[in-house]
Image (cartoon, rainbow, N blue to C red; front, side, top):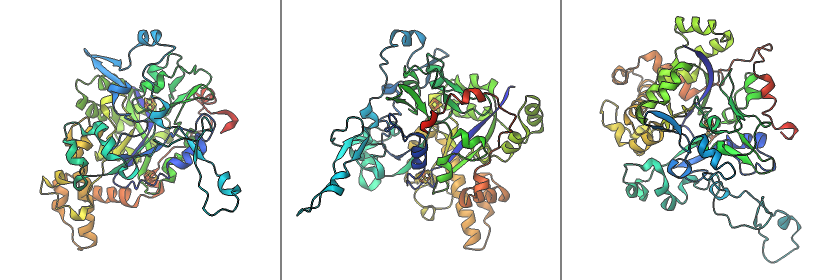
Length: 473
Ligand code: SF4
Ligand code: SF4
């Protein structure tokens, strides 16, 4: 057993209000530069929809992530030979139109306009060419289901569902999906880079791009199935979410998590067994990847794990943070959070609590076992998004979420405790109360449990210097 520590984030989709506040500080701090205008390390997509870049989930088009072929794990875009042949022309790259052509407005026309009969208007101008452009797409183009009738059919999460039914107004459903780099345990971006410029930090699992080594081949861009590596057209190098590592090292959470208005984000440390990664990514079926991924995560409160972790050099403050980790509770203990598209086999470390729908007051008690399947968002859609189509874990998570709400409601409103609700989802009262505190109240110190880095612990510090963006940040 090789024990390692890694940061993980959980996002509770049940509470995301789609305000995009998380994207703004990230943009201001990390991608507010020439060549990075179109990049959103954090973006919020409206589901159903095809997202940013367009159809990023469709690996038949984008060829990202891994696939199992005759028992062997391979990059979907092909191995070294394929890259060697195509080194000067990567055929699987998204175009700027798949992301969007970044634009600004000609504000001078408003300010400098002489007095006229009609109010002056501003026209959008491309930030790449400076020319006026017709807007056709953007990072949140589909907000509030805009254009769903046209784009909805391209959403791969409708697999095995009658898509026409859900595109009808009376059946339509909606939720938001905030996205960032998954800082995967088996990152396809790292494996795709011919220059070895991408790497995963030994001490905390954050995946970074070494700006000195990057040669701009862009195989990381096509290799990442979540399309969370971007190419800076000015520097000619790749860039990606850095999990706000300068803040993380100081014990502060990421900007997206800190600024989240809905308090939907949780950041904490997970311990995992690196020896189990290989069998997990080679799980025989796509649906078997999620349980295998769970199996990699270790219980930090198990005395044996604690002893082994200490013997293998995991720092005591990291271990202490792992024991209080909200992400461990949400992912492994309570099984509320699920990975995004586990079938890509990168073992993502940003997980999602599926959204309930409609509001729980309209949901009958959970003892009626089929009730949860009558929620407005189809179970199969969420399963295609989060568990490679396996509905059982999604159903368990939704039942538990619903039970917390109903139990607390009976307690607060009706002044009684309905224990049958707990039994039906296999939870005790203490657990329900802890879940309620974390999910509903979400105090800062409970949502973000981060160890500060001891000053002398400078493993890999020299390499971190290569990953910033110089004095332009
Ligand atoms: S999500 Fe992040 S770590 Fe995972 S493959 Fe993409 S860029 Fe790499
Ligand atoms: S700030 Fe929070 S609530 Fe608002 S869109 Fe981002 S993740 Fe959702």
